[in-house]
Amino acid sequence: MKIEKHFFKSKKFLLKLIFLIYLILLTKIILFKYPLHTLSEAYQTNSFEMIQQRLKTANFIPFQTIENYLRHFFSLKVAQINIFANIFAFLPLGFFAPIILKKFNKTLKVLTLAILVSLFYESIQLLFGIGTFDVDDLILNTFGALLGFILFKTAVSLKKKFKKLNSSQKEKN
Image 1 (spheres, helix red, strand yellow):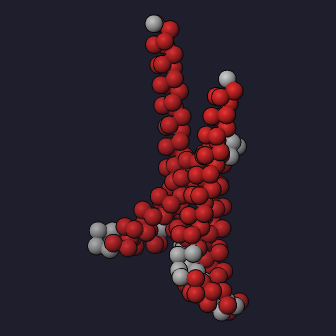
Image 2 (cartoon, rainbow, N blue to C red):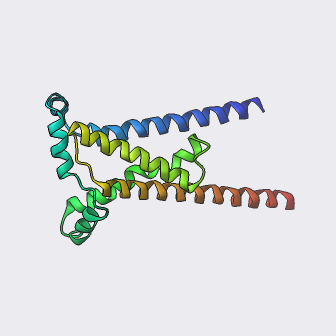
Image 3 (cartoon, one colour):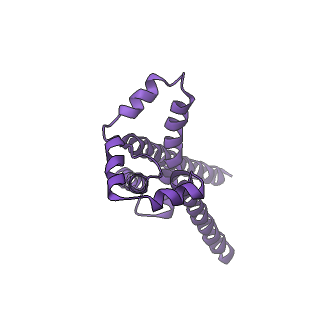
């Protein structure tokens, strides 16, 4: 029994470690995608006027970028990459959040978490000029987290079914 508890604790630790590594990689991909000297330069030349300029080029119209990407989906590789990258980047958030953060076991809570995390990254990009704010990224990121949550719920359901099937077969033997 003590070995099972230790295994369970080490399994939880491993999942938390994987989640932490995921968050670090997500931050690297979104916020530190440019060389360090470029990031340093962007930070040093940042000003209120620069933020105002970035606000003018930011996309606050839902589905504008997505529509443009879909219109050119098969002809523009960048469209395919951006759509899938934004979705898949947040898929692990939706999958791991209910495992690591127990209170995030409902759809609305996971969606709220995804929106807040995505909004954090988009805001940092806007404020520091290390990317472009795009509301469609929020939409695609949130959709990705929702897909991850659906995968989590499916995995939990399958696990319960297999466990039930296993226990009923053991009873027959």
